[in-house]
Image (cartoon, rainbow, N blue to C red; front, top):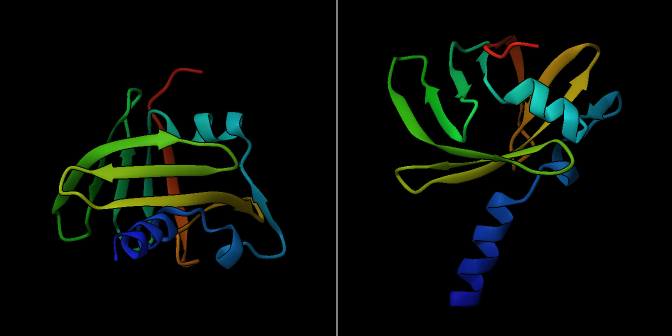
Length: 122
């Protein structure tokens, strides 16, 4: 049973490569990930916002105003993993398609970024 739980946990945290990458997607390089994520706020079309601090803290503001806090980790191949304080974890892949930044979650669901704002100095 423990092996099954570990397998399910690993599968939930795996990148979305197999399920969500489409023709026309360009997975962000490690340097692009740092530029697009660290110190940035991503606003999605439903009104939700992901905030990635310049350190490793993270918050997601839901469209209804609720906030979940945690930390994030940038990994290779366009992947950012988020570890929420309430125990939930997820790893998402960022791609660019036709000039738009798109988050793909571990199940392959795509969330286009409506607005990406960087708080970093260039």
